[in-house]
Image (cartoon, rainbow, N blue to C red; front, side, top):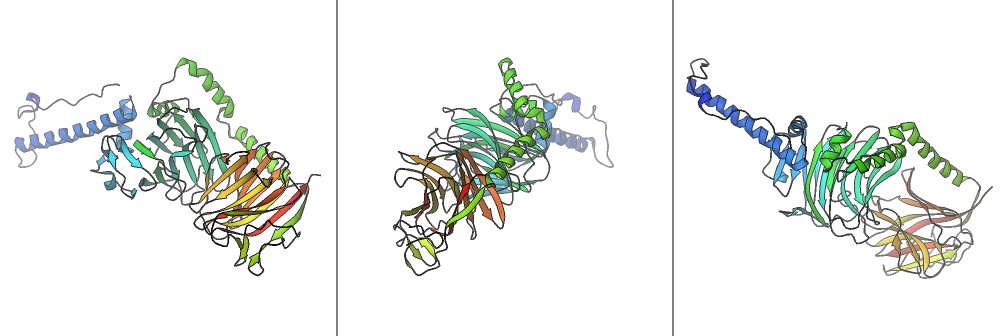
Length: 484
């Protein structure tokens, strides 16, 4: 690390003879004391710069000074908490600190769990650079969130996560443009990950563990307000069962080289090919190139709506409490594990059960309002009536996840999604061949949640619901599709 030049130490050069300054009626001794105080403060500032250079690995003294002046620094294992040059005796004393529960701070960092989590409120309207270092649990097949910068709603966010395939990824959710992501390294063995990302107006860049910078070209989510450590947001998806070692928020953009330096690595020759691949994959940061991919997705969605769509079954359950019987429209016979209660479909005792009917069509669209209560309200589709089916699971913590069961226990497909539980939430699953789209509809706005291609269960034609813990569903509808 480059050495930062020093002020001369107090000594013979700072005696009365060397400092013949008189301010008003003050003596030389008072003036000398004031200058020594200034030197002490300057040296203290220099120590803070050194601390940042140590914590973030920034070798350039000028860049270290910029970070020291403007960044918010959280170094839990070293008990360093600063907002610019202002030091804080604890994390709680920092401006914007958000603490839920009693997260213990130890030599490993701050312990994060469902019972204890932290965030920091730092609203930003321009560019912002973030670094986090996370000590994670061993990979067990579950997706975990390392950190997220979230706006005034969960659909406005930038998040870093480790997926259910041990792939680290940058995820950006825009309330209008939807969900986009870019993968990073895949590592089943890693127990600690340091990542730095820079959010700009039209692109977000990320470096995992000092690796090549990957660019996600997408409009910046609006109203970014809080950096959450070890979770998506308070109340959404289980928190990381691990530690945050350190973090940083800097309200400026940095170049790729410094972004990699903050993330902990330097470029080496064998990564040149990877950088070339990145330029090709990112269209050399050309917005129009990435718009082509967006246009393709929009074209696919438009094409999926074409054809002859016919309502084959619909049920609003506006009938007397009792057995399900047949659907109001279509007259399709429900299996009788659930019942009508209070103009919804429910499990009579609030327990775990499902019900379905056979549509006769593999392609189509299933829709329903889902109310998970304290358990779940989920949609079955392409169900064979036995051990093979797809399941869209809705849980009371706002979790939304897609599963497939294929002669075995259900396994997740894709990244879990978070949607706040509100009256009026509607979900729609569109099935066209091997392509599966899942939409969330609220307040008249339709958001694409999943876009999956999978050839399993292509021929099964039953659909239905699964409920638990008082969950219920309403306004179920199935439409068939015939291509034209």
